[in-house]
Image 1 (tube, rainbow, N blue to C red):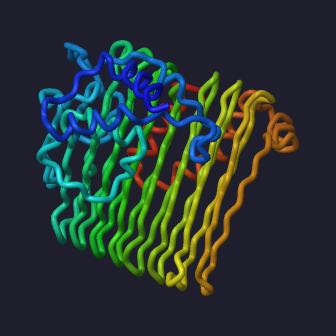
Image 2 (tube, rainbow, N blue to C red):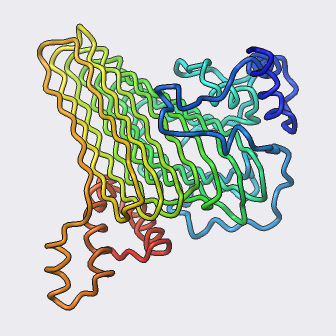
Image 3 (cartoon, rainbow, N blue to C red):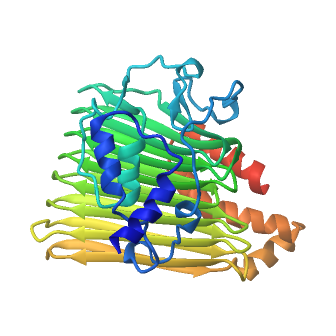
Length: 412
């Protein structure tokens, strides 16, 4: 069996160049005995990764001479990364963030990573430069930092690595944009490690707007110290196969954790969101709200898991997943989970799936609005709640503009 797996992984790695250092060379040797997940793995039950595992990717793409990211910028403080390579000449960094670019021999891991996960291992073995972002203690940064990951060319793989360290009593937000420019069958494999120190406030906005043929696996590993607040907002608008993993370890008391997601899919797009919040200590609050709008033959997966450990008393944990199917051929698999081992908690989870309200459509049509526009209005209202939760007007305007460009939605 090991020989079969080795040959399969060898085929995947055959056209990829490994950075020339002992750390990553050893990781790649370990990967050769691993396999890609299948539908027999509970964690990947509804997501098939054959489009990734059977493809031949390259990580030696020639940088493009002309890249224009202007339409996606919401900050004048930004870094452009093309196919996993940092383009400093296209970037503009002029803020209070402490930013460094580090290779595998220079980085210090901020959290515990699952090295048995093949995508995590591939990233560790193949990434070229990690973007290390540090917010100093007591520093409040009003202007966000934007990371623009752009895919170009054909059959290119990008292993992106982000390290975020929010110092004690700091406050900042980071925008992560995934876009494409004449890209076909490209694969983004991204890991974000974030450490949120005592009384720190960190917000991540993820805007995924890649080519309809592109593939993406994104993993965020986060740990929170006492009195900290962490928020992550995920907006998936396009992409053939998108998998987002968010794993949060709440290690200190009096923490707040927020996760919001807005997913819009059409065609044969597949979007899978897996979230995990581990409440390890008492007196904490978490809230997640994911909404899907599925059209055509698109498929979605939501798995939200919350654990309240034995000694984690006085925990308030809430989870909601709402889904609208615009087509009879669209589908969603939803599995919200709560594991509670403490007594004094307030926890709830729920999932609803349905179609647009015919009475509401009739009401709008009776007032002279076409059925098509009435659908757009209702969908915009449904998903608008999640979009507005970002509390960042520039991010909200960008998402609304992208939705208008892609689907013709208009927001009041």
